[in-house]
Length: 605
Image 1 (spheres, rainbow, N blue to C red):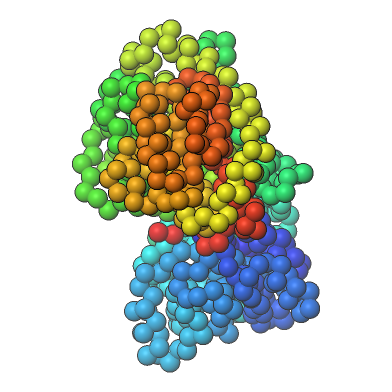
Image 2 (cartoon, rainbow, N blue to C red):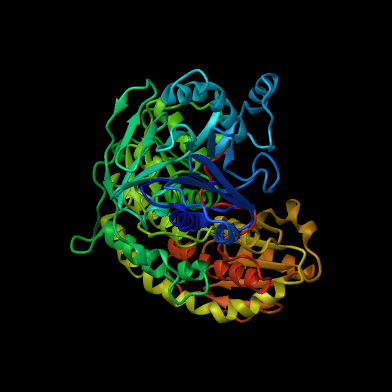
């Protein structure tokens, strides 16, 4: 969840490191730091808070070395303070680290017995002192390998040395790391986005890889310490997509471009002339699929829950949904006729990647749905379905949620058609309705002014509840998650039919309750559940595509969304909930793009 940058150059690197760290702010962090080699010594500077604070420190006391590493930290071991901020340096070595060293306490005790003193509470400082110790006996590469052999857990590392003062070393196990290539300088970064301002030539490290960067070359080594060649990828130039433009923040931009996300995604997968969906090189024949297992975390998990309803409605395939962090520790019975689908915005989500690795080891058929096609999950799975949302910078997923659901829906339609579980006419109708979706999303975005008014009702609330049935249930979960993420207000998402089984006890006078009630097979029952809330003083916000005024009696606010195919209502239900969370957070002066304690890419367990 932290961000790493390293640069080996022939000129001062501090400015570029700072600019790259600013690109990594979207990942979430609480402190920042930099270390460079200046006049043959390690010059370390770090602070609590934002990169701007670090930039001010460097303005007063510059670091002009031609080689360095930088870091934005999200606290795991040790509270957010200057001592625990990265880099962690000895006289000989400075290290930045993303990940968790699970045996750090044991290693720390052994190092203390040797006389080493620790300055922080972090697990990372163990790496610094282990490497310092091994460098007394071994050359650079062997000392690094001896250190890595001692570490249990996950890591992406950037390392500089006093003695070897022309190299930056990177190492990966479990956490993403990329190398970038430039004229007379080379780069190390947690992701390509941090490097894009300097280069579009990128290589991704695989687990166990080690890289050694100088200003003129990059060398790679595998687990066996054998020098290897790695593919260099050229990234597309979509710099404008990662800028706010006229928007106040990235999240408002990303919410408002969801119609474009939908249009782009549909264009990529739907053949307009043939009225067909294009899916090539699928890892398993749809006709022989016994079961589909959908796996994700957070918002991606909610897209999986939504897709379960679609697959069950359109096919006769057994469907399971799993949270990745639970899946990877369960006893799983794998079957060659099962398809395992992994959903992740970043494609680097640690638990999802670990679950995918488990499937790969058991020779299961795998497919990934990601926003970053160069990511670890995309490169590990047999088949990749990109969501084509473009860069998403706001920590709380919005347009990528729409994109994930859209790809899953398209996949469900296509599998149903191939298995002949939907008629050709129904298939064509579904595609025609799908093509209308971008305009329907654009129309739904027009509710912004009303959502801003509704948001005021949440400012004095102690909590909130989101209720829905069928396809609206996972959207209720997502609405509650968005409110929690952005405004720090406690919120519960529940299937409306479960109210009498406990949650009704939470309803009290003035509690905001969002009811998702499209005119579908659940409509009357959901309205009945809504009346239970009204009878107990709940302040109801009804979102529906039905405009019956009688139903709206005693409802605080009613928001009408456009009518569409029942299976497409989740897309339109989602948008008011995103706007609600956004405006509540904005009224509370919360950091919209970087909510506290959260990271965009969750690369540790």
